[in-house]
Image (cartoon, one colour):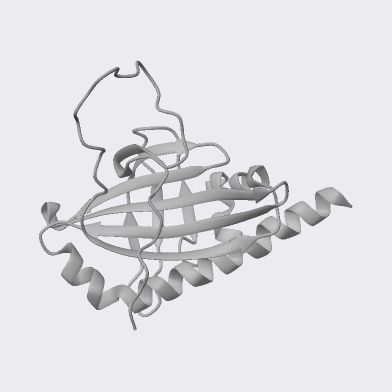
Length: 187
């Protein structure tokens, strides 16, 4: 069954989609647009009936991830470019692992991207959460990872079903949490 390619990511090392370019604008350049990173992409998208600000509030509160997120039961750190996060990764059927990814990019209410290098640089990953507003209280959240490096895609293919299921579970938990927060605020 062929899988449709996911939409381009919003910003940073992934190129741009729908955002304004910061800094001076080139007047006449022949440079090609930035390329998305190569590697295996695993992604799940979910619709959430809550505003982007509420979803971002849930995502950005790392210390409370343990209350709703089984994939990262312990999370801490500051979300700022270059900051190192402390996360406990609990993939089903795998040993629990401590990871320390570096924040690549974040935009409140829109996205969080981090990178992680493992096995001496043989595996490089970019993990992302992106929020796309459709209406005042309706969004699509993309939750995924690009797995690159010399052996990354091979390892990613071997773990793709496990990772995809974990992303589905995380998105469903994020949906339940954000919609509950939004409903409580409306009442």
